Amino acid sequence: MTSASQKVTRIADVDALRGFALLGILQVNIMAFASVFYGLPTGEPEQGLGFNDLVHVFISTIFEMKFYLLFSFLFGYSVTLQMQSAMRAGEPFVPRFLRRQAGLWVIGLLHAVLLFHGDILSTYAILGVVLLLWRNSADRTLLKSAIWLISITAILWASLGVLQWMVGEVQDPAQDLLNAQYAYTAYTGSFGSVIMQHINELKLMWLILLLIQAPCALAMFLLGFLAGKHQFLAQPDQYRPYLKQAIKAGVFIGLPASLITALTALFSTGTYWEIFGLALSLVTAPFLTFGIIALMLKFFDTERGLFWRDALAPAGRMALSNYLLQSLICGFIFYGYGLTLIDQTTAIGNVLIGVLIFTFQLFFSHWWMKHYYYGPLEWLLRALTIGRWPDLKRKA
Image 1 (tube, rainbow, N blue to C red):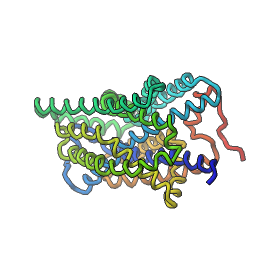
Image 2 (tube, rainbow, N blue to C red):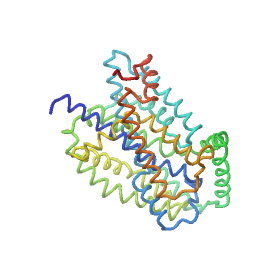
Image 3 (cartoon, rainbow, N blue to C red):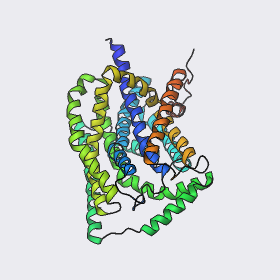
């Protein structure tokens, strides 16, 4: 195989991983769109161990707290590619990167207010700037910082679990039901009422992002940045020896711990057991995330995997546009300005809707990238980054 063809394959692997991450993120986010009870301390009404609950356990076990970590790892990796791009252009990296992050923050804020209060882009925009503090750090410092970020976050939540165990239960089912009814009225109303509900929920959402997702995402940024420094994913001979170990760690450490977390969320919602489960997940979710990465890289190295790699890669090349498109479609399906199906669908129905949306995105992305160099929002961010309008449409 030629060097040029190897380069194309390796880039496609990274893009395909990013495309695959979109599917996992959609399967988690669609649960938030589909139910006003999602995320409330007392959980869904009438929880037990029916088929719907088993589907929720599956989604929670495989997708929740793992695929945003996968996306975060790839974000950190991509920062090193942007550094290389700035070097090739003979321009300073930091001003370019800060312009890009500012644009990402604006897009994320608009996404959070208009489409989905669970937006992660604005957090990524801020954490990307924080990552600059480590850009000249040694490998050991990057690794130790990532471990400390995850460990301190897990210890914090475990301590909160102990505190709740000592104080006693603090659930208020009546207030949760009132909040759910208020949210249902807002989400089945006009576009304006949906926006106001998003703004109301952002107050709590940003606290969750700060205390859970942000430190873990930053840790994965650091690990992705470390991998990117050594062009780890661009050199199969480097990562192949580690694939089997990563898969074993994912299966024997990450997967059982994730299942325990999902079951505590189902049967002990709002209790200290759920908080202990969350702390366990914070420590072990990276194992499952890296296991998934290793499994996909191993799969892409097969004849059948090559087909799926090429199918996923276009969606990954325009991941930002696809991420927002997912929210736009879900908003139309579940909210009052569209089909108003919120709290009208089953868990397996939501999974199938997610698969249909993602399938459409695969075909759409393939068509778009065949005719254009960038996704719509990727093109806009590229313009902000380099300070001029790049070519968008491919020449015939």
